[in-house]
Image (cartoon, rainbow, N blue to C red; front, side, top):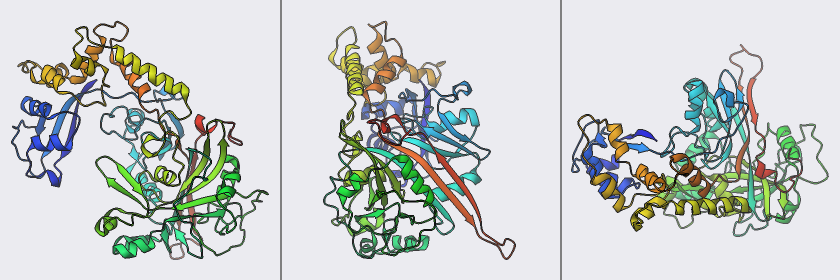
Length: 539
């Protein structure tokens, strides 16, 4: 644990409100009595100055809250990089980039209770300043790209965000393990037929200018262009799956499982084409790939997404037919993902699939899989079960909970026992703790540093002391942090497997006779959960 200041400039909606009101309503880690004490004790300041509870926030005010931070434990890997004090797998280290295979539970950047225990903080201890090019959810594992300069971050970051689809391309591949026989549970989502073209979740052209016009249009135009439905294409025709597979149905998709090696080979040979599009046009086969006798069927889903609550990170997908027009225009964005079956595991009734998002909406893959009736099996936020098919982890979690429940204060006070059982970093303070540890604490001494005072009046330290006062085997934060890690989710079965990016430089006034291409292609090893059930072709 260490002293840390959470600082933020005043948001527009805070201006004119009292600092006490803002902290009580916008932040939920403590009850009002704590914020009252923290303001009076100088733990909460405005532009480095102490204020009273009735201070009204002004524009450009810097609000700071200094706490004794107990960071939750995260998972890291023992790798050949451990001698360099880098507890993560480095996929590539070039003059321009650091490419990492992120473990689940480790956030990409500092956020909330995770500051030093974040991927960027870990890398900066070795590389100095690094620039985040793209993000993964904390519970997701896989490829994360960092640039060593702001220029490189902007250059390839724009490619990752598909800002210039005319001169750049970006293909991302993920692995997921979902409930049931994918996609047999799909119901309630219409199948798209006819000669419509769907690109990036939009009916019709999806050029950059087209998307801009789409965002600036009215609700009726947006609703008419945002595609909502699925279609099936044959991925081994050599033209990127652009031929509509009119005869294939959901059962055919499930039965057309192929090894990851086959999927990657097909994707590699088709990477120069817009293989996420749905169209009736046919093209000649430009590559040398010879299709197998069994088709590699892609199921494509277009379903708009929106962030329903930014503060809590609540996301949704669907046709949003009942959503008010003003909210639709403001929040709904087109989204499209393609899925291919790798292997069904009968023992756990789960399917390992390949996922290929063409757009990059928040939680897009997780939302789309839930909409198809096949949520990521252990994704509790979107229809999964925390310990799905993992009795060993479930048992470890139960044992950790029992251990935490055994850690009680010697006096047996019910309120204090509740505090002792609560997790250090995740559970809000209760009123009894605030009164005992914070409000009734002796005032800060004249020679006492703010860090020492914060440590002395730390609720989380009091909880640790409560649990260890009668137990010589659990007298530090380390054991408790490990127990809490066992209780919480250890990540979801979603892994960023491969990123392929390309920039095409066009000839300039005869200086160059032909266009030039610059390409990046990085891939990780499949995670252990993708190998379960003897998944064919994954090595």
